[in-house]
Length: 100
Image (tube, rainbow, N blue to C red; front, side, top):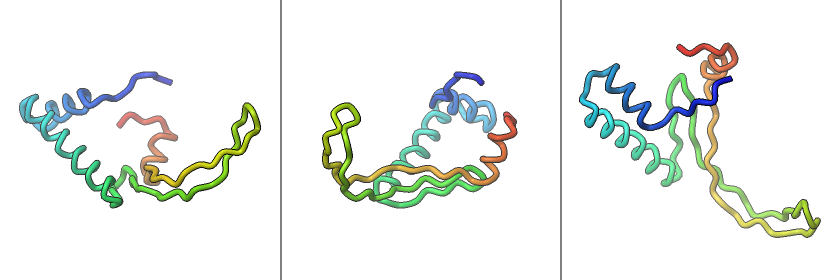
């Protein structure tokens, strides 16, 4: 299994190669898309990308947790967490190990 990480620069370069925009325009397009996604998630909206997956924000209520080292009970405060659910097509693609 490869340990390479896909970065913003890699995505921007892919847009440059595939779409034909300039490198600067490709980077701006990518930043705009990511900003729209971030804004929607921060507002509590769900972001669904067909054939890829769904990003959503979940509200977690407060609960009692336990420090594994000491065994002491500690309260865990309520919070919002980001979750991702891959589409069935993405799951199949990852399971098959296909790069395309």
